[in-house]
Amino acid sequence: MSLLTVRDAATGALELRAEDGAAIAEALRPLGVRFERWPAKDIPEEASAEQVLEAYRPELDTLLGETGAGSADVIKLDPSHPQAAAMRAKFLNEHIHTEDEVRFFHAGAGNFILHVDGKIYDAYCTAGDLISVPANIKHWFDAGAAPRFTAVRIFTDTSGWVPHFTESGISERFPAITG
Image 1: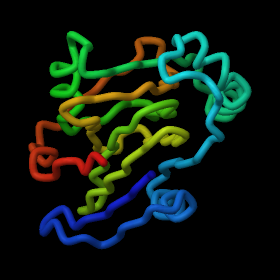
Image 2: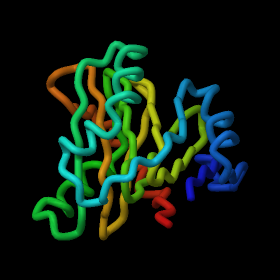
Image 3: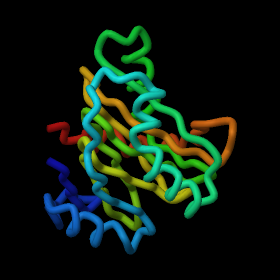
Image 4: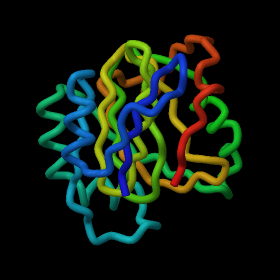
């Protein structure tokens, strides 16, 4: 189940907790964050990247047309991946991108944590969730110590995922709620 919590960045006080997809989308909309639920496709969790992309082709074509993005790929991460710990460490540091960061979760889950206007927005995304974090919004990502997800990534910049780290240290104060 998807979940959004909003906390005060200074005190950690909880300001909002939402589990309904429409309520999550409404809370994130003022930030320019797009949150949607797409119907799940009947393909196995272990499907190849090509199978995942093909299954979601109609939705992806619409999204690519709307956003002007040029490419999509699939990232799969599970605890057996030899780079899982290193990838988690990299994703856990607050950063920005010069383009929107768009993810659709086919399987598994992960937290996109946004740091905006003195608030921490923790969006726990599960299978069927699409989230698009606008360029230059400070954020980090956590799928836990034993990550397990398959996500479609959408890019405008052909160089792919390029972070610009803030080195603020705030991500260490707000561990993700994973599950």
